[in-house]
Image (cartoon, rainbow, N blue to C red; front, side):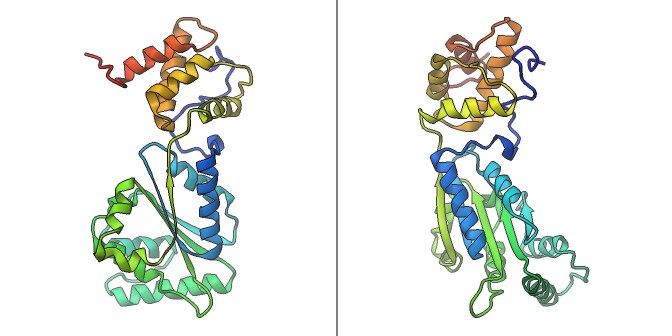
Length: 272
């Protein structure tokens, strides 16, 4: 709709977790480095962060980095019972056996993981929105999977991704056996005031725009209403671009961001 008007080849502020648009702020760069390290060392890593800070985009970027030496199982809906969790893992490993006996299923998964290891392939299990895992029993099955070890090497890497509440949940004593196996922790925070300009410019360049589009005042306004949360920045920027297009405005200024904040009901603004 507005792409041609602003000289864009694509929409720069979509909310999909497209790793091309990942902006490596200091926090995001550190988070990605820790995820890569966890994969290389076949550790369990816990990545938490506020809603909309870019956790899912980071995991997609991680998946893009990994080569054929890794088999990635990405679980995006972890509302699974223990049996459903094991069946999901087995299905993604192309294990075709009756699922009536849990012990047989675990043996088959273990055999497949070891077969991959001997072929130079590491299993990486990424669980997004892990705070939605319904009970401790499913977490326990996850912990038991990490028992697939040799004397000198782990066979599985697990990446747990979730909201801040997940870390508090794992602090409960009933989750201690799992928490003690987590080798790395990282909390992803929002962008700083100084990073938002780079974030905006990066996404615009990926979409084919190299000239200035958002004024400095507009960027300051974006920070004021978003608090540095990328998802909120994307919503405001998209609303401002649509509004600017309808007004034939060649740049996005502070007033357009103010209007976007009002439209989205941010910081006290509310639409009827």
